[in-house]
Image (cartoon, rainbow, N blue to C red; front, side, top):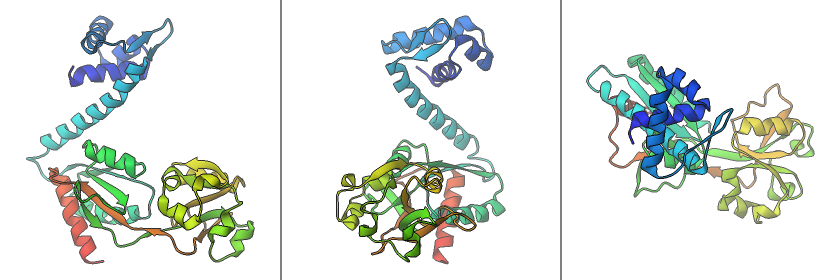
Length: 293
């Protein structure tokens, strides 16, 4: 099994046909079919269900698709880094993180670096801490933005200067909107929309004084923007971080929790990480920026 074979497999999975994949790959159908058959024989499992109208993946095929996408991404990233290692500072920097206002600081650092090295490009991926660290461990991102605490046995990190503040996003016509702060008692009987990470947070359960599963949780979200649209329609109250939704000229408002609930933020990278020149320069710029804030 090599990268090219995995690329063939991914093309077929995406196009759902040998004909479409062959056209995309600029090759004829027979050698493509042969490569896929050889791949199945090598792995000892059936990967494709060859229907009369389209090709679908078996359960084993879906597992391979996920891993193949990671491997091809890593291969492409590595090839770019190697090919640009003897050139001027250029290339790609990959950063993973959840929704956070800290991205504004990352943008300021990136802008500073871009002024010096305009051929550096940035790729941001979203996910909770578990997903970000998984991508970091696999080499699919260079840096991750994660909340405290950091596993210092696995990662190097820089503490970011500002904490994220938890609160509630609600409709301005809600009775809670009249309050300056929201306490746990205010939310006990309210329909709540929470992030998956919040749902697993022991700190949030401690603040609520109850197991979160005992609350009236009517929905969960990955992206706060989508949750905010549900709040706009009166579906519930979203527990979230501040500064992510612009509530000016909006029917929504944000009220912080009391007692205050906040999380510290860090930018992390793997111990003994071998960076591309572009990623090295980004880290240098980040150190400079943090030393002046």
